[in-house]
Length: 325
Image 1 (cartoon, helix red, strand yellow):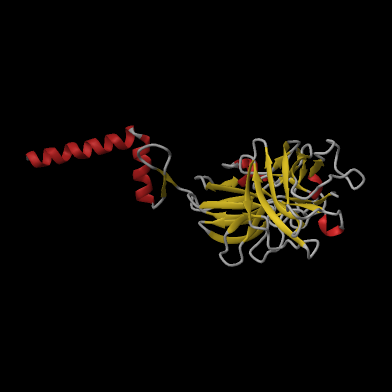
Image 2 (image 1 turned 90 degrees about the vertical axis):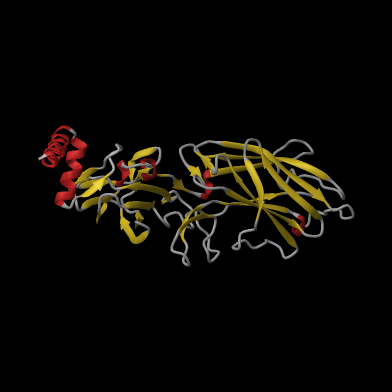
């Protein structure tokens, strides 16, 4: 009789908890109905009675210009790490609550772009909530659906002579002599409400005559610059030239809107060579922007200045002549 009384109290306690504690009641209902428990932030997961969720991949729009919709862009979707392919903006697919979703917005849009018709790809990751329908743009990292326009002209590059402080040009150039060590002021200025390499570093390649130039170094105030590998896609403009590369980023990225980088290009000339200003002795500066691409070997999205076949990603790569004599 005592055992029966104890069991009765257990049953009474469980029934009371079922009606008085909503999260416990929902958990029990989930077990009975076969629903998938979804963590609601408490100590006890609540039940989710949704089996299928309709995910809308969109809508995408241009950053700073919300009335410009990116309706012709395609976005690559991964669900639980599995590539689902590319979906036209605002297309739908069926997922399940608790699925891990990753979207690469506007994948491949910017590759080789020379006009603002292309966009930089943006990455978004979120967990599907317990609802019947969801829009990707309303989820975590929702700013990813706002796409930065891609254009090689989105960055203005200026180099100034150390000799006179003037803007470097063919008609007003820098004079270099044997053994010189000079630093030319350099500025990169972004275009208002546009971007250049908004999610990853800018790789700057500087090339000069292999015989007369001993070394280059590049730095910007408040920007992290480190020596890097010359991109595989880069070809020197003259067979007599050698290239140096620098990966530069502020807060891990390039320029957004009209941000400005100010710094210097240090040039060290060989002690026994006097640059004579001939074609091979001119200095060239190239910019390579970062963008997302799908690695053909791993199937993983990667952020870089070129893909695994050394093909360019992002916008076209602008170059600047730095005239010397």
